Length: 158
Ligand code: ATP
Ligand code: MG
Image (cartoon, rainbow, N blue to C red; front, side, top):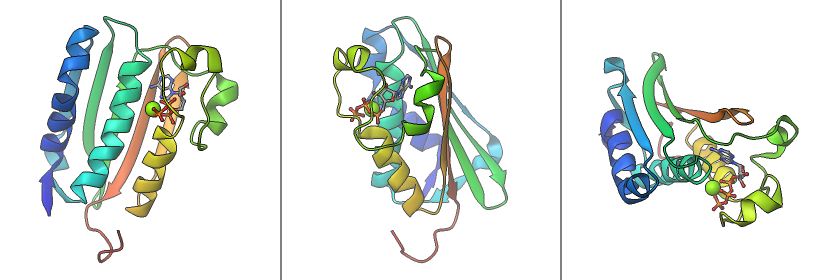
């Protein structure tokens, strides 16, 4: 089914409105007009968005900011970005961040709860849709995760 990229991001933000308000985190949504509509398995992509937005909230101190963006990066490729200005990730951990159960610095993570599966699940889903996912982060500055999705799925492979 076709879904507008904007609706996908707005709905994701809405699902977290309570936590966002509680932590006084501002969320910005920016969708390029060319982003348009995409044929996706909405439930699965919502799960990717939920995992990324929940991380952005969890690892951003009160009063922080999150931005959700969507743009067409190639004629047949949508790129979605979730960016925060939170605690960031140390360089040494970046190459393992998508591993199952991997969590940075057990001490800081334990207090926040979680199993270390969110990013690995997100990557599996994106890959199953023929896309890719990358994470960039600067300790103490913030984190940016971008994933791509082809506008047209190869048959019903997912
Ligand atoms: P779960 O998602 O299963 O509840 P989790 O959030 O710890 O647990 P992941 O989402 O896979 O697991 O993330 C792995 C680790 O990467 C986290 O423990 C955290 O240390 C780090 N991380 C992920 N996203 C961010 C972010 N936006 N800012 C800072 N650190 C992050
Ligand atoms: Mg997580």
